[in-house]
Image 1 (cartoon, rainbow, N blue to C red):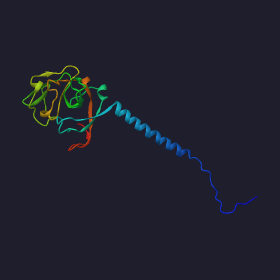
Image 2: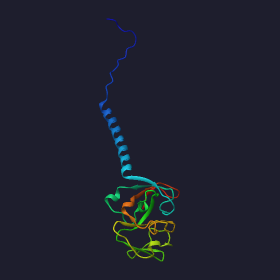
Image 3: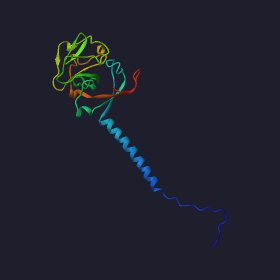
Image 4: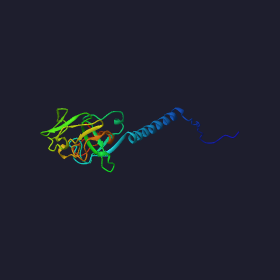
Length: 193
């Protein structure tokens, strides 16, 4: 038998570490599942749009990106104080309007001396000024079933339900509830109140 000359090294056969392989496959699976869930959620439930105009200042600013939940109003009804995104009269050629709901079906609204009254109670918490132009609320208005009344927080610089060309907003024209805003100018990123 011939002997090998020189150095010899014992080489161990490398065994595939099954535990490590399972861990890697698990990580890949969960990363893929998370990305898929995020895409499906954003596509089916969420939506991003931008605020157009100064009608919602100081809550939201012109050009500020917001995210909305398109599913929430399929399972519940809009509430007073919700910031909603809608198409006026369902006009799909119009840009999205972003306003705050101040009246829900059955409410009676009017503006007296620059103050909004809903069912006889003054509402001043949403507006940064007195209302100069009452528009359709010069006289009392009672909302029908499935009608909502919306006004911008910057009430004197807002085209909203007080305008005859918009009027009350039907639930079917509401795209969704605005719930999150991106940082813009003086406004920080966060939930929309």
